[in-house]
View 1 (cartoon, rainbow, N blue to C red):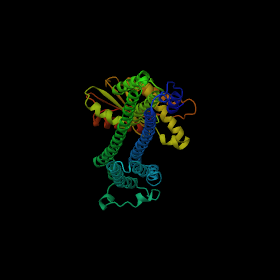
View 2 (view 1 turned 120 degrees about the vertical axis):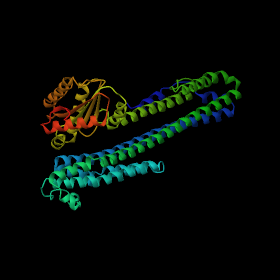
View 3 (view 1 turned 90 degrees about the vertical axis):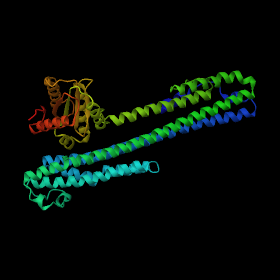
View 4 (view 1 turned 60 degrees about the vertical axis):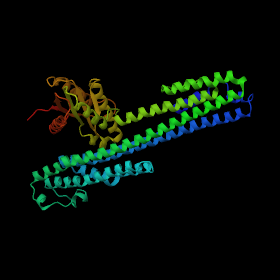
Length: 461
């Protein structure tokens, strides 16, 4: 039973003296007041429906922002993998995303639809993010052309966009090694990273703008409900003045609940179910809206920080955690983790099995490390673990955990295939820094270059 149905059931069993019953003993003015009270309840219900619709729209925009980010990151990943491996399947996947899947373009269309007439600046930021991503494509295709030529093989099997990309005479004269190095520099260099950062900043601006709109509309909705309660208070006092006989009943059934409601609202608490039926009904509706608002805020925070598939902290949380740990001078270890040949799992068993493999690996990582450690999913099949207050002279603790995980993955139960993880580990004695990530990434690369299914502790050259 969902939350909305449960709320309706609670409302349906509410009991109490109805104000309209008392209105039979009061002058015609009381009837008018009763009608206005009913109208106030309808307004609260309408506000509830509008709030639910607004929250749903906000979640859709957030999903499309995420899709745009994932689409851009996917192109980066495929271009970099091709620059490193020269495997044409990565080039094919790259242009499959650009010409067929088109997550970035479709996400921008959805964002424009939902933000139309609300925040043009936010839409412009999203549009600029797509334009920057398209500019990155020139660097990525340039890189793939150089990488392809560095192999000395024909380009006939590659997408036409790569074949037709023009190179300078100087680049054509490069040695294979120079072409390969130039290809990597194009997609790993400072210019590329700067543009990627600008894309992330633009998408963050869009998310912040959408959050601000949601918060403003929520505040307006709450204010409308408070105004409805104030109006009903005035109507109630008018009934008391008209009919002295009804004063005691009104005091018990109306005035007392109002005082309680005002205190609850001031203290940001749910309303007590008390008083006349109409007030109990109003309290139940208000409480339902309040609880849904709190739940939706929790959901939004959770979606912003956690990966929907595995339940681990996501890339955005990783970025925030890095900023926090830069200010921390204590020792820590960074583990960068890749699922080995994950693409083959998807290709052989299907994406459903691929998702199952990701979830299984995520659960093993979360179970193997301490509660105080931070286990994150930072990419498609990429994970990270940040261990605080861990000493570099105790690598056995980490290596035992990785060996155990790989043993479990190599001896699967149920329908899971055999697979493994590769890990790169680096230590820092003064909190997080960019060099730590580079060291861990270099160690991970060494693991994958030396057979995968294992780990490498970074050692200075």
